[in-house]
Length: 345
Image 1 (cartoon, rainbow, N blue to C red):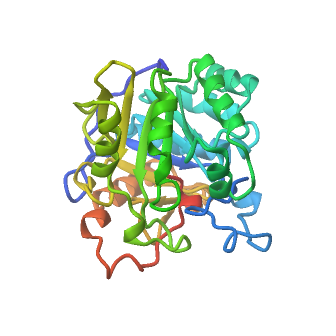
Image 2: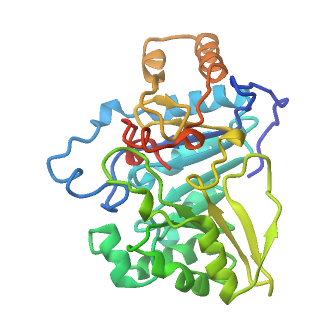
Image 3: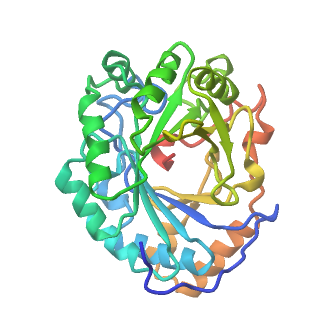
């Protein structure tokens, strides 16, 4: 995307000297999948109480916060959920965000189930720059067991093609790898996406939230993933695109593409984390593994001035000292943490 203006680069360091550069915005806590590692059906069944619509941030409120975050140094926005494509008139919001001076990149993470050709084009036309599609298996049976709503893999693969055709690339494919669940899909996924222009990213299974029954022995280390793919198709390390990038990058030596591995468990990268996260109801979290947020919706709806909210954001980020993944231990993994479906990935 091409912003109308570029603000002077602002440095807002946290307590550990990390700048604020990225804001991930959850648009809804609802999802049409029940993935076992994120929204297990036994905890998110028909009786689960999702947020009332009135509790969600309105588009004008998200736009206002986006502008204030941009003034404090944020350059990248990622729209998440739940499933963000469940939010009505999403293109209207994207168009608003695309006009914010200083924002240079707007992306969206989706399960792909609702992404048809017309929707992909509309998203691109509104100002969306990139799409990331979550796809944890290429085998239909494995994929349906994971999403737990019997949704087949073929429409998701078509969604990837629609995103590419609309220019929402390079499309990234996110794969959460669990041992004994879908670790047999590593090589088949690599085989499928080599040469397609998509960037395949394998994510170590993390202890986000408290409902997925996370165990360390279900984590497939990033090093093992790289070794397995390298044994079939030689890989070469690639330098990060920018400071604080979450994925370690590798390219196929034969020039057929790139993969990434996100190793939050075995190779924590807290020291370079530049990300804040905004929940659908306006709670600001400074860590994916946080237990409580800061209520920005109350400030917005109480009529607080931009200066007051900007000062509040500055104070929240300035006091930030989160580094959960570096401190993870058998004692911390059972701590109460916000659910991924609430805060976004």
